[in-house]
Image (cartoon, rainbow, N blue to C red; front, top):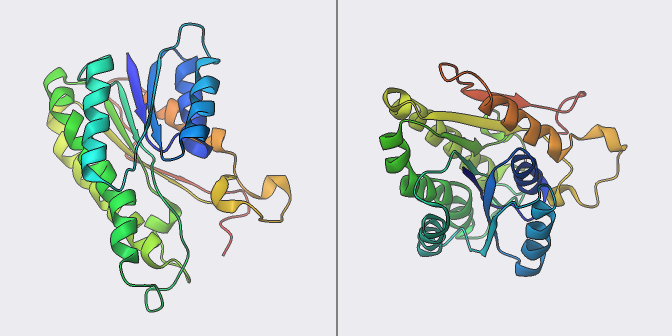
Length: 235
């Protein structure tokens, strides 16, 4: 039994990988920074004695790299993950009318296409096995536009659309699909933000929600999870 978590060297991805490893899963993770990824892999292995961790350096904005990651996972763990968490993403604030040329395409490749290609690599086996759960890490920016959201918000709206379409397609095959839309979380994206520690959510809050959604009965699925700090998002 194994789980895939993309963008798992830190933040929500790492917290989710640690949680699932502690709960008995073998883990496949990826990230761009090899040194940080190595540390993440070691941290995940510490969650459970004997946990097997595949940690690959991958540019999730590169389709061939994504497919290569999928191939390595299948060679290591088999074709059918119990859980696939599409978490890889980049955040750059900006306005649509001011962004440099090519910015949308770059963010779309990482924030949307990576989830599309990786999911398509595993969904045939999940359908055939009639089991599995896909989680797509969207954002509150997937639900409401905001100033300075720019291409980031566009890609997150698109990821939510992908998740909703996949949910409809997988209903007959017993494969669960959940979109998870967190507001501000203490991650690298918020480095330098000066506020009380309880003003933002913790990465483990999101990991715990993913675990809770996975643990429903076979005949139940949570389609959308929307999470915000107690005082709401920071605008």
